[in-house]
Every structure is written in C-alpha cells, then in structure tokens.
Image: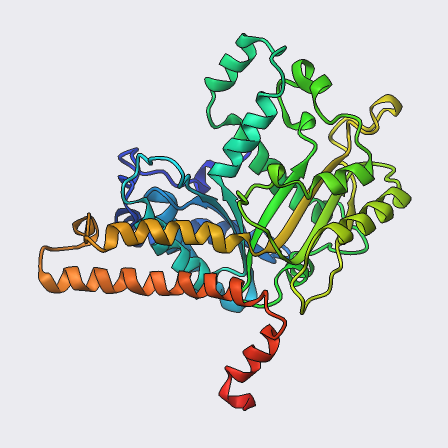
Length: 396
C-alpha cells in the first residue's frame, strides 16, 4: 500500500517544472487552483482535529516559489485564521554563483507571501546545510574515498536527511504527547512573540544517528554525549541550519531532547549553563524552554550500551540571524533590479505599462522584506516594545 493516496498527488501533465520562474509557477497554480484545493479538501475531510497546514518548498526556482505562493494565498483565503500555516523554507545558496539567475526575484516574491500569510516559517539555509555536510563527512582522512565518493553521488541526500529529521522531531510531542507543547499552537506561541518576528531557525546534534555511514564515521562523531553536552552542542554555530557570520541575539528558544530515560539533572544543568552563554534581546525572558520527547516505539529502543548514541537534540530558535540571511537576498535583488535585468521574464506583454507594473510589484516585495529586516534589528533595542506602542496612534 503506498504511503500517499495517488488520487491526492498532483503532477504536471507535461512532466516539467516552472522553468525556474516564479511567474510561470504562480500562473500554473492559478490554472489548476480548483484541482489543488480539491486535493487538500479531501485530505482535510479525513481529519478529526485539523490544526495546522505545513507547506515545504524552496524559493529559488519556479515551482516551489510560484506554486508555493499561490497555495499560501489559497489556504489563507479558504481557511483564514481558523488554522495555522507553518512553512518550511529552503533558502538558496547566495555565496556562490547560482544556476538560477532570477533567484533573487523568485525569493522576494515568495517572501512577500510568507510575510503576509504564514504563522511561522522555519528557514533552512543551503549554505549552512552544505557546511554541516562538509563537517559531517569530512571529519577524518581515515574515512575511505569510496565512502566520500558515494556521498558525492547523492548530492542532496545529506541535506534532505537533516531537514526531514527536524520536521519529524518538531512533531514528536504531537505524536507522542507530553504535558507541555503537545499542540502546534503551544509551540508557536512559545517561539513567535509577534507576527513581525516569525522566522525560525534550527540546530541539530549529534549527527551520527542521521547518517547512512554510521558504521564508518560514528567513532569520529559525537556518540558519547549526554543531555548536558547536547544542550551546549546545540549552541554551536557550526550546527545551525542558518549560516551565522555575526553575533546573534535570541528572542526565544525551544530545545527538544529525544530519547528514553532522560536524565533531568543533566538537562537542568545544561539549560542553566546555556542561559549563561547566549544573549537574549533585553525585553524578553531569558528562559530556554525544554521539551522531553519520547523516541518512537517503531524505532529500536535504547539498549544500555547505546544510551547516549540514541539521544538526539533539536533546537528551534527565533533569533536575529534572519536579518543577515534576508539582507543577502535583498542585495542580490538590488543588483538585478537597478538594471531591470530579466524583468521581461515576469511580464505578460512587452508594454511599458506592464513592465512598470512588474517593477512596482518587485519594489513592494522588497519593501516587505526590508521591513522584516528592520524589525529584527529593532527588536535588539531595550525600548523595542515602547516603540511599538508609540507607533500605534491608538495608544498615543
């Protein structure tokens, strides 16, 4: 029996994508929006207590950005504030030459919809994922060349495995309920203080459990870490799925510890030490929230000699590194937009008015993203909440 009902899978009749163009993807979504909504409705009808929609997509190409943007609009229009919309966003590599020359346009057009319609967005940065993979698979020269060659033959396997592990871990307390954080609402309310600050990042430790090369590299990896060690390891910038090149301040932080028979003393000790090491924005609590998660019963249980090897940690945080990631994309956008390069890819005709319409749309999207960047910079101020009140005429 297939994992997914074939009736509820949509594939292009031509079998191709959206030519790395947001406009093509969005137009395709409009053309098939009724069919897409019917697929979603059929799945929703099977749910007894639907709480959240989760959308996983990239923003650099055409299908993930264009169709993804359209789906965000459709879900918001159809379900409104009744259901949460979580998105898992794969951010493109900006430090290297991209095969998609219009990548900055696609990204900003998608970010505008995420800002408007999502309740929480988990950001995965390709640059950071690549760095993690290099650290993981380049640990020791003792690893055979055949192993590394096999790794290079499946370029996306490692990144996909990291992302999928985070996705599965986030839902762990929902699937195996605990006394806290047993709903998406409680998780998001802990991490997202306001609709303007809703972009989240992840960190993961240890890595040995995630690799198909466990037998070859586990002896070089972190297989003997306990709860205390993992909580501190999650603070290491090398293992964050969002590339960090500058000091970061935290708005909120939630640690997932996944394993059986967790040591509460080590957890408390690690949490106290972590609070001493990280810097929170001055107006928020410096609390580090922890959820103790059970390992799935469908996975082999912990054996005494493998206790620490079967312990994993996930950190979800809301921090100011998002401003850096978004700023890189805005700079790339400005390089293209100032010369109006490739704007014709997004126009429906060659009219001057149509070109101006597209440029206005681009500028509107840019303004929305810059506002988010400014918000993450402003939130580092002691007077952030007071400034928010003064900006609202109702409170003056």
